[in-house]
Length: 203
Image (cartoon, rainbow, N blue to C red; front, side):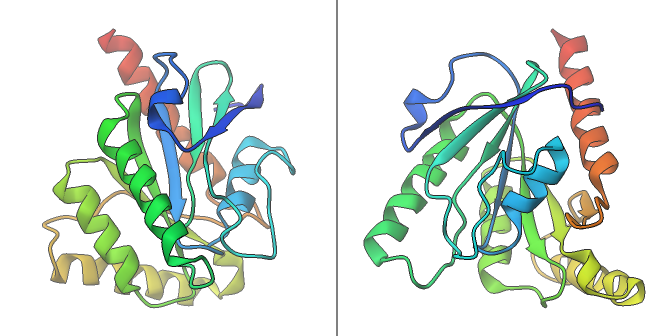
């Protein structure tokens, strides 16, 4: 997929106020500081589209970006950041949950996972919640440039095996990425393009 245009449309915390256009949406979510903004900027080829910050927990709203006038990339707040107050956490959780359960335009979520770390309970629980609510999702492993290729491969295998050892009969589709080296860009965008083409055929 060639990205011709990528534009910010809106930020809000109310699912009812999200764009009304019947375009497919792909939601990106992960623990704070997982490299989500950098990944989004890499995918769309614009350095400053999604705001990056040294301070985790910067994204605190549902952010819609229209891509090629054909689909929406949705940047959701990170979860699991200790310095956010309990009240804020509860609010984030509430509208993230509402988005996933009520947003009819949502086609797939992408759960971002830092490839350097062993499986985290909060990520596994969130994926289980998505699965139990029948919300399609894929896993995007980030920051692959921080490890040697053999370590990346090993960590991915360990992660997927843990999913199989718990509640999963088969593992979700997964991608290995590096925003710094643009690794995985074609694979993620190609996956989205394939789904968009299938949706167009059905309609």
